Image 1 (cartoon, rainbow, N blue to C red):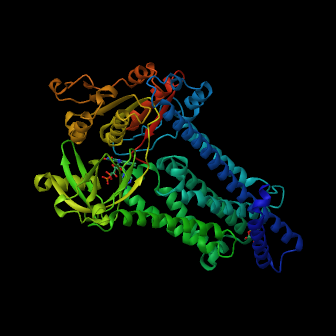
Image 2: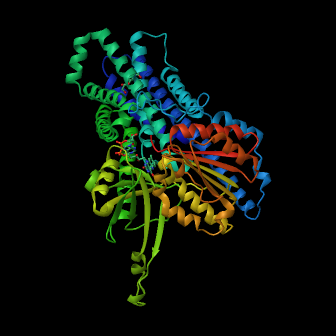
Image 3: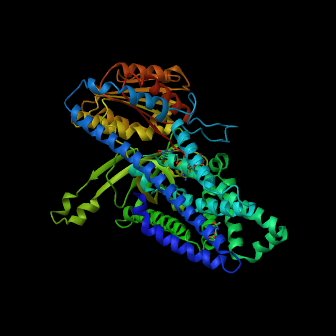
Amino acid sequence: MYARHAMPLWALLAVATRMVVAAGGGGTSSPAAIAAAEAANLENIRISYYLGWAWAAIVGALLSYRLTLAGIRYIRTIACLNNDEQRYFAVPSQTYSKIKKHVIDAPLFRKRHHREFNLSAAINMGTLPSRFQTFFLAGYLGMNVVFCVISIDWSGKQAAVLTELRNRTGVLAVMNMMPLFVLAGRNNPLIRLLDISFDTYNLIHRWIGRIVVLEAIAHTLAWTISKVNTAGWSVVGKSMASSQLIMTGTIGVAAFLGLLCHSPSPIRHAFYEAFLHVHIALATLAVIAVWVHLKTLPQQSILLAVIVFWIVERLTRVYTIVRHNVGNGGTTAEIEALPGDAVRVTLKLARPWRFQPGQHVFLYIPSIGLWTSHPFSLAWSEEEDSLNPEKGLALTQQDVLARRKTAMSLIVRRRTGFTEKLYKRADASPGGKFTVSALVEGPYGSQSLDSYGTVLLFAAGVGITHQVPHVRALVAGYASSTIATRRIVLVWIIQSPEHLEWIRPWMTSILGMEKRREALKILLFVTRPRSTKEIHSPSASVQMFPGKPNVRALVEAEAERPVGAMAVSVCGTGGLSDEVRRAARGVGEGRSVEFVENAFSW
Ligand SMILES: Cc1cc2nc3c(=O)[nH]c(=O)nc-3n(C[C@H](O)[C@H](O)[C@H](O)COP(=O)(O)OP(=O)(O)OC[C@H]3O[C@@H](n4cnc5c(N)ncnc54)[C@H](O)[C@@H]3O)c2cc1C
Ligand SMILES: *[C@@H]1O[C@H](CO)[C@@H](O)[C@H](O)[C@H]1NC(C)=O
């Protein structure tokens, strides 16, 4: 069946290939050799299709899984609107909960996934992929190895084997550049389509990158060995200097090697901005070199698709920036220094969007960070419907839109680069605050926990920015009976009580919400209190404790009250994520649990 669909393009490629073979092999080759090369070229195109179909199958499977989950959540929300007990949804399916526990939500081994391997406080050696991610990556690597070697006539002459291997690895390297570039983009359409986060795609991007580099190296080695055998090293050197094909191939593979060597976690995390600039420069160099290298080959069309996608991704960024920041006086950011090494950034967007929990933006402040952008979660929004009554009734539609200014806020923890400059400048400004013009790119991502009867939110430090919008939306939804949620527990772990200042006004507003007492419980854990006097619980629904929480006990206690399906969300350090993941998996077989992990790095 697939042959019928694929036929037109395939036929076109086959014709193109035949022309190339005829042109390249002219003169010296026998008719038998030309026929063999033609067959090998067709085989390579067929394998390119296999790779394409494999991707289609993966995306299709994940899409149907995601749509099924979305359907279930929708039905659950509707079914639970007027049901406070929701016992039916508290019990999980045995098979599904086992798959989740042992595959989907599992770390690779026992517990570790997002906790970093650190050589020292400054050197981050990266994290371990989860079990499912590892299966996927190992499977993809295995598939590529198979594709590199199948249907090559290994019993043939060494030179012939090397030629086939050279062509095969070259074709596969170019094919893999498609997913490599698509998955690297912030605007990768699969993020939304499959509801998989950018940091997961980033992981896959890194591994596909490694595969591309290995295939490019194999491609180069196959050529070099065969050249050395037939003509010697001096000719290898001469070809690199004189033949455009070989020269661009050499530049391309050198760029790939550079990309491989400068990307490991310690370098990436220690010098993120420098990494990013070098990465883009080397990737551009590689694409240009490979483009010229493929000049006469049908595979150039694959590279064209890669280039088009890359340009479209960049233009999408420009478009979202222009759309939300240009006109209406532009976007401004008020930056206010807070106790505990953080700043509050209040954004007044030229044209805001509808705020939703789980959104993050990329913030550009040219006067501080030039053209660089940094991701931050949107923690709060304030709609200012300040229609000025004095101006009378002559308000046009434009006036109304211009006045409906939404302020959106971020909390930014001071690190060592852009965020440090931001903090220092605010701290040195009169009153501890200043206003600058800014550009905001977004919104990216959004999450709804509306369909869960019980929602348990964990945050460590500045991870609270991700959870506050959920708390607000869930309490509001509970009060208006438009969601399934009946119990909300927020667990926030901070080092010192001064971090409470970060979100004080928003907490006050949440604590003043209608029916909040019935649904919301807040547990604060202060890990390094200066004295016990700092620890006091304002009320039964807001409690403060010294030290670290017993995550497992908290999750188990909530799991014992069967109110609907339970969501356990975490945003904070890798260590906390792993702890919460283990606790959620621990209760998953008796209770319907969804583990939701949010990471602040990639
Ligand atoms: C989806 C998401 C949401 C986030 N939300 C918040 C938030 O609400 N509040 C908050 O304080 N922090 C948040 N972060 C983290 C924040 O982006 C980084 O702390 C910030 O970019 C560090 O900038 P810096 O120049 O001071 O970093 P450095 O001190 O140079 O580096 C600190 C760390 O930040 C990483 N980093 C640096 N620049 C970038 C960048 N441009 N893009 C991605 N990572 C980078 C580095 O790899 C390093 O691990 C979020 C991150 C992500 C991915
Ligand atoms: C290898 O690729 C080149 C360039 O497309 C082609 O001319 C040649 O026929 C191919 N040979 C084999 C054995 O596939």
